[in-house]
Image (tube, rainbow, N blue to C red; front, side, top):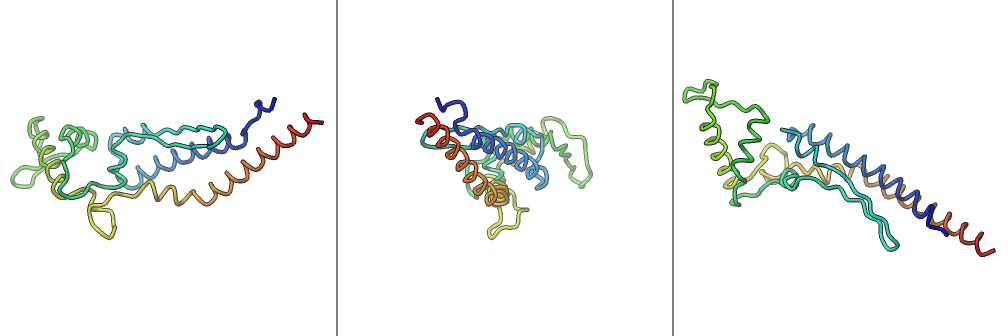
Length: 177
């Protein structure tokens, strides 16, 4: 009887914010310099689940986005060198010879450099460039985007939920009469 418009405002708003979060995470990945092949950005998607007891907005993506966000601490297991090799290819990294000149690197040398980079990440951690209290922490992109959006998000969600409750009560009271 009331199912036709149940939580319609809340669903609409959660979908709008899902699109907004994904768009802002993609922008942040590009602006902070961690965009290489675009795979992380393309993997971002959102999902909305609403039932009687809870509503949920989830933003999902490649597992390594958490490494971009948090960084990788010192003395950890190094990342796979194949992933580093692919990143080097996507970024167009070129190698230098022993005299510091750029050189055309063979696949063998590129893989060797990828292995050395992976080993260094395992020993030292990642992303030293981002200014934090301790070097080698991640970009913090998840918190940065969330904190930029959260205030209006919370207010609008409460308003949409209130409108849905009001609509449901009005419909229920009409049906009771």
